[in-house]
Image (tube, rainbow, N blue to C red):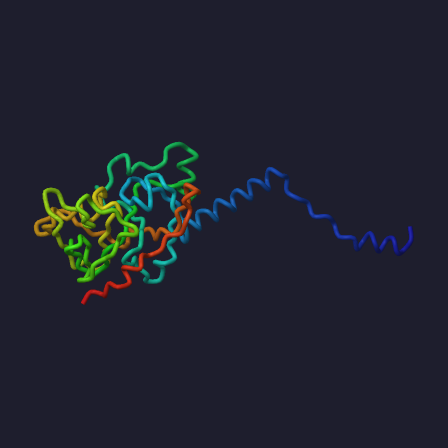
Length: 249
């Protein structure tokens, strides 16, 4: 054997050993699982619409994506945002509170790849300090004295009122100021939504055991995508009418 051949053999790098296919598969699945958990905890989570309360824009069983970044570093829900929040207590019935059933569905729900139960989807109408009045002569809700033009996204009752009437009452209630760290929420289907207006005790908050407000700490995030069905896929945006509402004085 020549000297040059000996040197070549010594300098030829050894081939790296590859993991067996089954081990690579397990490793990739583990990485994907960790990434999914991190994404759910910090960035995006999947949910579904549990009722008819957000029609006409969002229909029962629609799949939506919620982003959490907007409420980082002191950010909080803004008027007009469609938000997902945990049930404050007794707002959902048993069927609506139930999460997915079955081993695979439950696992996917926990890592944010399948819609989870026990949450509500509503639109923020008032933030801390706001006063909400129902309604002006045109049936429009007023926030801090400014009427909202909600024709593009909300469904009024048969009388054209955009503020649902407490049981046995009229379209003439008011609520607020909204406490610090809370929001007042309503469904877009104003006459068929178990939202803040249902928990006003007929508009009389004195001696009322319930609270119509949602703690911002219970808000998971803001809905930004209607994901499914695919023929209605689209991004959600804050309606322009809320830009005209002044901050509470």
